[in-house]
Image (cartoon, rainbow, N blue to C red; front, side, top):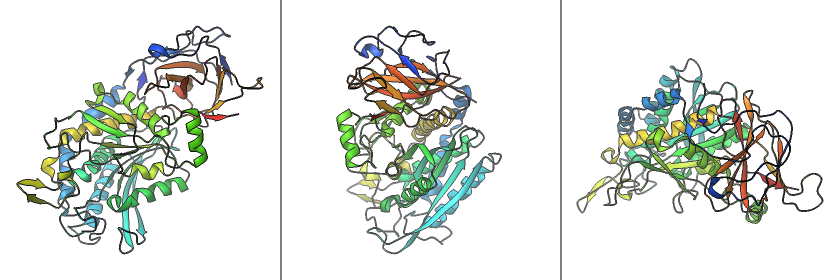
Length: 485
């Protein structure tokens, strides 16, 4: 089964261990191409750099996207609001009200979905006791519900999608008042459950993890524990999406609705870097090339409006201004992660007691949620997860050599190296380029099935990355190289 496929794929990749691709000129990437002739030795992918062309999509993916059902999403949100409150500190044992009853219901839904997978999907309740903190007055059990669709050829690659189950009102410590949490974040949980449902009947090279996490409003506790456990197990999480407040297509505040846009927040300077690594980013101009931003660039290429009915607005910020969600937990473990959220929040309908004040209805109620909008957000997630789990993995240990072999000082040549990908259907690699002022990659140079390449392009002038390509033309997210001597 194939995923996204680029129409600009090249044939004739070689199996040599290295490649010296000499491109004459200054290395400008004007008009989306390097614009230089090959002047070195034989290169099977003749023509040098090529502009990035439109991506075509697998018909199985299109069929899967058509299966996303707004009415099912709405029914999930309706049911979640009926638990009264899903506050982390609410009852764990009441059979009809509180976080315990809601967790049981989500687990039952996940298990029913897993039963349709032919044994490929498994479900676990990941529970732990959170010690006392500023928003946890007594030791409290927190439970994540996690469904894992194990990959076939590359099960060691993980892709995670979450929504958070817990809800709140104005007072973050009020665990008794009604907190329906329709948008924040039953919308995200409904998205995750619908993704699990439509993906369960399929199999992919990579592993996909669908999770309803808890404790978000009290301090990201559920996702933090989940990310820590995955890191401790050595899981190679190559992409993570938090769907948090993805329910409203307009803000109900007089602002023009934007029902066909979802925001995707992407950090620049990584969360888990040292002061020395930040200094290196500053000296190389890599602030806009974090793993998370490469993930965002990839998502926009594989989940366009023409496929999903949604525009993905990439925002170069960790999250909304001075705020955060569960993707931060994964970034803290060094994983590429992003947050999806609606285009313009309405603060009358989140983190509010349910009440009418001065003639205005406050509270996170289901009547302010747009099921069709959530379905489109779900399709964006689905297209991205399909491509990530189907395409090759992001190349590892990408490096840019400041003193290439055979030289004794600085050089205008650029030598890149990386580890070989393990996929059996790998065809080779591409070096992607863009001007430093461009937001996204604009051209690509096929370099063969190799682990090093030297180009006559000055590293001073452009940004470069490495991506893997399989025999069907499917491409990985780009890896940004770190400098080495």
